[in-house]
Image 1 (cartoon, one colour):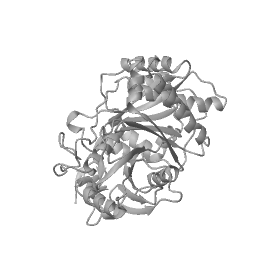
Image 2 (cartoon, rainbow, N blue to C red):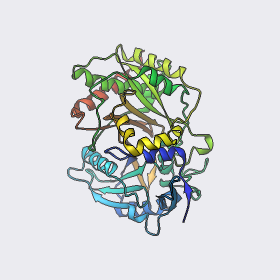
Image 3 (cartoon, rainbow, N blue to C red):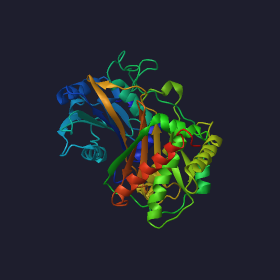
Image 4 (cartoon, rainbow, N blue to C red):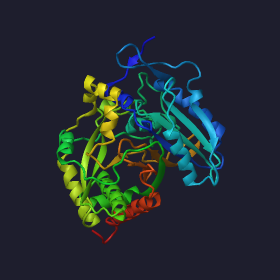
Length: 425
């Protein structure tokens, strides 16, 4: 029994899942409305996820070649969907704790590499869905493509070979539209040359995680960016570095800049709606001194200079020397002692219109990520129906000042948005 071999980028994600926290990505969907029923949500999840070929498969190793996707057998989809009740008081903090626990619990590698949890018992009613994917299945944009096949009003069956949706045929007009972002071919060379400042934030991470979130109006963030010729991504770079900078200053560390590693999609247009991993990285040195406007202008100048040449950097990592480093534990030691970046940022363009699932409105869409190596603070941003949600994955053993970090993130977002207010430049 043989199947399709995994791609080079996917193999990297599979081999590098060696840390104390698993390499998993996911999202939290909060469904509202008085009539939403957890049992119905569970049924629809099983039905729609069962339509996706890759979600009915598992990875199998044959000899010394790359692992291959093979059929996981009858009942494999239903066995990955479960239901639970949110602990009291059922508020945002409690729900985020449920989502984080699901994200940090390793998936069973003998079956399909995903799980979905339907959560009831929320304060004020409603039902939530936590969807967790192993990174070998998809990067962030691939995860959005999965969402486009799960929401209501789909058109046409899911194509085969792991592709989630064909261009022009999403589930409804508001479905996510993955966007290709360029990455500078010199990004890795810049990272090696410049390096990152040494901070108390860069310590090996453990298995425990806490997730916190902050939100802003997407239109206000865009308006702020326009004042300095900047993108939403540029604004986010200033915001997340500024939040980390405030935390470090409270620790007595006063730095000029931090290096933020930005995940950058390198998908070809014909792969925009597929699963798999098509991601590079772009390290950006974000200044911490000066006004929010000055810092944003400096970041915008830097990112403009470095855009235009897409390059997938991860495929070189499947060479035998890299695989030996993984097998001997050298790779884990390297990422736990790296001095190239201080924090991680992922930014995704989500659905522009409100979605429904199983007839219920999707009121909130929250990205949930897990950091790795010696970076205990990782940020993920996702826009949805006019709202920009920024989630923070924190290792509480390395960064116990979670309340302070949350407040710093909210303050930085407020300062950035103020740039676009009428009469302010």
